[in-house]
Amino acid sequence: MAGRTRARQARGVTLRLKDKRVLVTQASDYMGPAICTLFRDEGAEVLADDTDLTRAGACEHVVSSAGALDVLVANLAHPPRPAAVHAIADADWSALFDTLVHPLMRLVRAVAPSLIARGHGKIVAITSAAPLRGIPEASAYCAARGAQNAFVRAVGLELAPRNVQVNAVAQNYIRNDTYYPAELVASERFKKHLARNVPAGRVGTGAESAELALFLASDKSDFLCGQAIPLSGGWVT
Image (cartoon, rainbow, N blue to C red; front, side, top):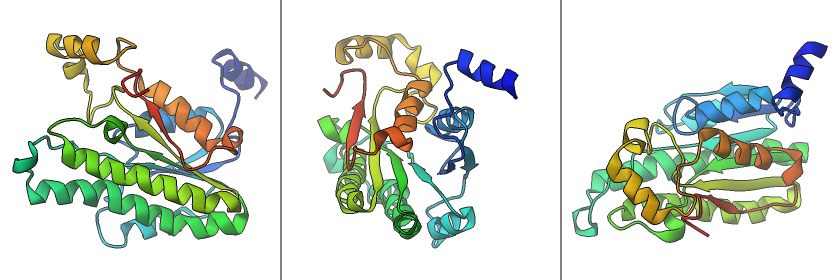
């Protein structure tokens, strides 16, 4: 045991989530793998779930099956479906809201009563910085992610007096298989785009996003409520 503790300390691991039970949704996609890895290293019991949350009753079932929770990480992703505004397909618009917006509400609605009853808890949504700045020909995606951020803002203020903190990692230009896979990031066209648009001059790592999520899930963030925090290398300031 002492050897494992020293090894964690050598890696900068401080068990910031020791004995916390954490549910991570869509755990195999988007930021799920990085978050699950870091949270486990930091002492959490991570319930990594990959249920299709668009199915009726799925969100409620996942939360009830998880049992007592300290933290919900609502990690939800869907490809952006780029299109000029006059060419947005109803099916694409609906798919974005069915995958990103409705499950977030249902997950939070399901978990909030138990967190309130316990007198503490954290809800962390992994959203996007896209609606904070806007992306031409991605208005449907921006609308869905913007709805997520607005929901986090309102619910964060509502639950703050109950000692339940709700916040979002509003990210962009973070490496992940859904939006920024390795082959895209390696392309010359993308590198030129990155140099023009991102002051940091690089894409962020999954570990960097997971670190912000970890802070929001930890007891160190008790005074932070209803925020969608940009993590985008300066693309959103």
